[in-house]
Amino acid sequence: MQSIQTERENSTERDAKGFAMLSVVDLRKSFASPTGAKVEVLRGVTLDAKGGETVAITGASGSGKSTLLHLLGGLEDPDHGSIVFENIELGSLSPGALANFRQHSIGFVFQFHYLLADLSAVENVALPLRISRHSPMTARKMAESLLSEMGLDDRSDYPTAHLSGGEQQRVALARALVASPRLLLADEPTGNLDASIGDEIGRILVNYIRKRNAVAIIATHNETLANICDRVMVLEGGRLHKL
Image 1: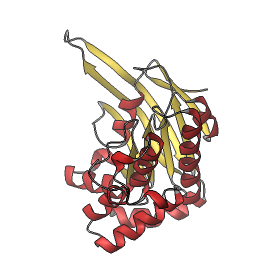
Image 2: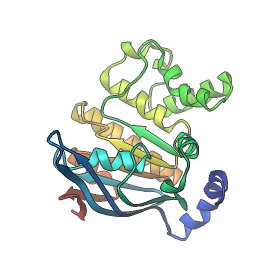
Image 3: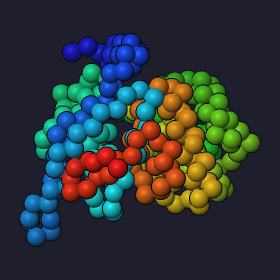
Image 4: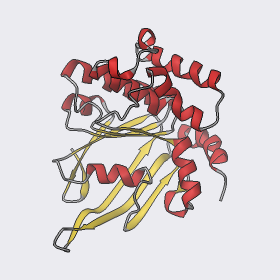
């Protein structure tokens, strides 16, 4: 198997030819209920996405949207099926290689931002880079640059506890994007925000993906956010359908 770095270098040519960067085939996942009964959440999800594409996943609460994102991010193992991103099959990776893949290739954005309240905005955004052993100066410069793109250059040194909800979510988005992930997984990223702030977050997210030729899978109930994505699909009965 070629290295992750080699595959990422080779991906540019594949993207230009229109090949799928993300390919999901017949993904299935079930859980045991409190009574011990088997509950099938995903019953054969198949999905392709190309570079620069944002795909919105809609569906009722409890339909399995979060479960799907967890599988795509390698946070849980499927019962059946395959997930291939940039020619790397997640199921073939060792635990260490999968952790490395997540660190360098995947960004996560959640409904709840999970920021460290005692750290400033720039320190929160720089944290993934510091974990990746970037120098403090390099990490800070990269974090400041992205916060500036988010319109938060005058808030970079504020403790996140002193920021508004919309500002905190923009910091969380910057933290997810600072390492330039090729795959962004967003779970209700505008769920706790008012309409205008949610629309702004959505535009920032979609523009980033198109500019970097990355892929975003966004689980959302927000119709405005879904409508600015390239495709909208609904998860119903454990399967994805075109809307």
